[in-house]
Length: 266
Image (cartoon, rainbow, N blue to C red; front, side, top):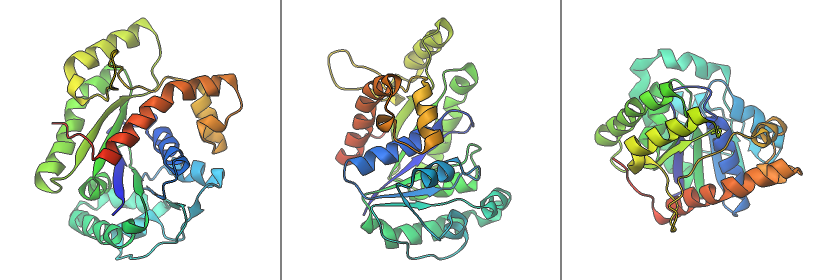
């Protein structure tokens, strides 16, 4: 069975989609077969990955996986299940929660053995679509921004994950919270310190003497990569090479944790 990862946050604008796409490109570069499922109705992952021409774009859409009993998918080293307009309507169908999760699980039971990794890019407002993804996932990774609203929302985010783990998916593991769009300003440094003090057990910490906490810096290279459908390391600019030098160890740690079986956070 392939390992299933959901990228989750309860607020938009945190760079979740960029992390999801770049992580998918990274896994493919490691020689892994990746199935990417875009269940964010905004469709930014669909746009960027389609533009990249790195993936085979499936004729099956993510809304179909939720509402129907799909049991097959095209075969390629990198496959994208795109979003569609129908997906937007599904957030207003809470009575379909069990149906969505059951259909998604049946689909992944059938196709995930053909892939090494399945990645979900979830919608920014947590609802039954996001919950369905968590019900079928092995891992969850949560990018957040270093602002007060995001810090205040960490408890709610972890509560949502724990609720699914306790009631619906006992095997769900939180890889960690990943600060994203980090700037070296006094304000963000203070918030970073606050995050470490309050939630150190939820952060991704690299092994080593300095115990570096994983984070993604603000850089135009990531925005440029997403806009052009490229992996960061493919951008032939000094800024991109520098950004990738900083980010690569953190992606390696996320990858290693999933390969090892991950670490469960409370």
